[in-house]
Length: 141
Image (cartoon, rainbow, N blue to C red; front, top):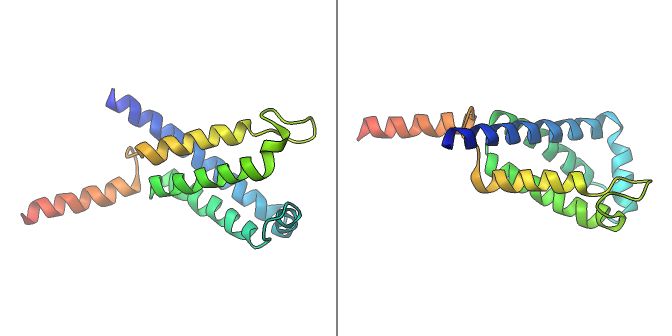
């Protein structure tokens, strides 16, 4: 059963990481200044667009390789809560015909919460780093 849970967590981790990585890259490819302007139009400081895009890119890569999974997932969860409350809540779960609703953001939030609570050790850089440390400590003792 434990192996199945780890495989499921790996799938969630890599999928969530890849999706956030793509979202971050698109923000720069589409012109980050457009995102800065959009942030300002909804009442957020424009500079936050850079921070969000960088968190999405760096965090996406970190999740894919399994580095700081719980921390990155917590950050992604906070981003999704912000997106839902500030942008999507007013258009509803399924949207209003002009803008998508928050159903995808809610799914990303659920994935992030699961990973923040449970982590994901299978094929993770963090597990390799800490497993190595624990082996060296055992040898020293």
